[in-house]
Length: 365
Image (cartoon, rainbow, N blue to C red; front, side):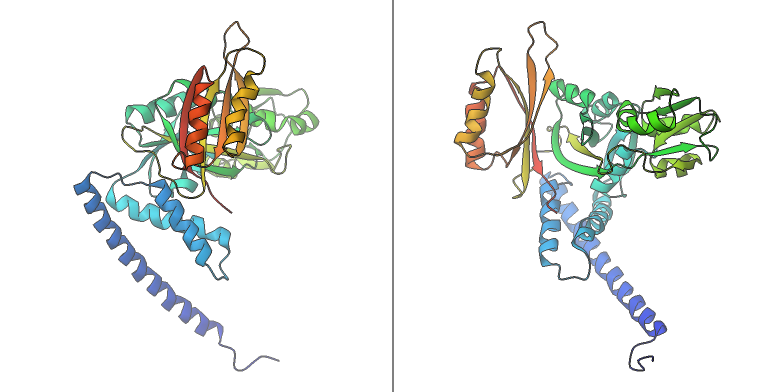
């Protein structure tokens, strides 16, 4: 039996429409306040984007959320709201590995929201150069993959760049085989970024054995090329498939079903100051030590002494003839915290090379 006291569908829709009107009015009130903040920042010479402030806003809302809205929905909703309000103050230009449809573009939109000026670049080098040179306010670059580890070119660029990290975001990476025709027959070559080719090694060996694996500047660039040649296939996102009119011949071909990529958000510290402590922060640095017995132990000792947790430790060859290495380290905390500051001070004293790449808020799920 139907409950005669329950509201009808039409009545519920009327209430939803009324609620939407209230939301729109509230959003416009927020936008007007954001404009006032923008005018105040202009007079004070302050920057528009403060990642720690936006992280705190989202964190506070998650704590206050009483449902039924899922906690995981809070961040993307409010990032879009803050993005739209921020765009009223000044356009935010964001560089990333292009063309349209890359995971880097998706990461940039996820972090900054869609109300940005997109600056697609042909390589990671170009992302760094565009951001350092002022063509973009921020850059978004892949730094680590859960399957393949660190992204070598990005790590190398961090050594010599003036840019610093002011934020991070991670993305579930679902690779798809895309093609003009909806079949695996007649594929002569598969195009993708080298990282994507490596992340799909087993699937390619099983389903397309002997087919050439051709590196591309980006997955989306591979999709663009595949759109113009019936004999080519590409590994890319569904967004790239839609962008270039390709069929998803085989979905989710990555070898690791939980494949994720971590992206760093970089900027020129001369134009955008380092984020202050938010309460949930990461400090990234790159160091090297002289090649002697016990050197790595001495490197880690200050962290233990001052109670600082290390969340990432990765080595890269220093490209010298002495078998020396650079170590990329992520620490839990911010230099504004006394124990982190003390650990960094002691760590600097035992390093032959020491560079803080950035201290920035991290998302807490």
